[in-house]
Length: 236
Image (cartoon, rainbow, N blue to C red; front, side, top):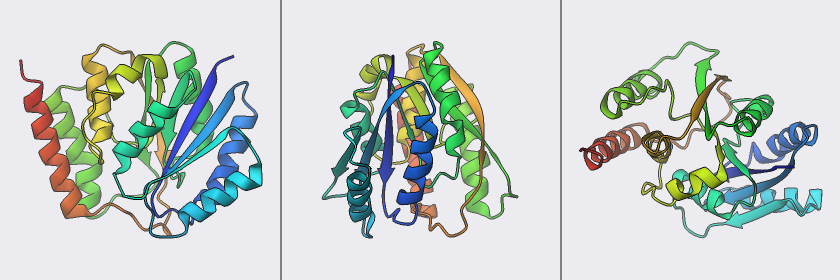
């Protein structure tokens, strides 16, 4: 029986951790797979680390691993660390706020089990996107990724990705970005390595009580810079 490793990267997520963990476990428990949860707290400034410890103690489970950073390294670096430490045959990560439902987990796991090397979420939205930051993130950036890197995917940025761990490990070790661009980088490198990548439609529903950790001007500029640098590095 194949084992699943699910990475849950956390940064100032105290409002989500307890309830999201319960929902994730409820879904994974009804599948046929063994699994491990890997919590990595990226030096949160709230009570996230304490809540993660409480969750682990509450479940008294050997299949929950907790890692606590003393310095913030970024979401990409955190997920990369989780993949390298994972023991499962299938490894994935989801955003702990579950703005994309845990109910999609079986579909992603099954896609890898049936032969895909990578399964990525392709988001649709339940609400109307307003404001320049939403437009840039959900429309303009994916267009730039497709045109500059010639990737055939609608959405490389969704925080819902699963991998055949054996196939993705050599590629993960080559990734250089530790921030938000890591999502684009891992999918681009996987595509250039001829891995089989499937897209799964997912519904994104914003949690109004959640405070985003994305800084629009700073992070958007960094994304564009990294995209251009990455494109140059793959020029023939």
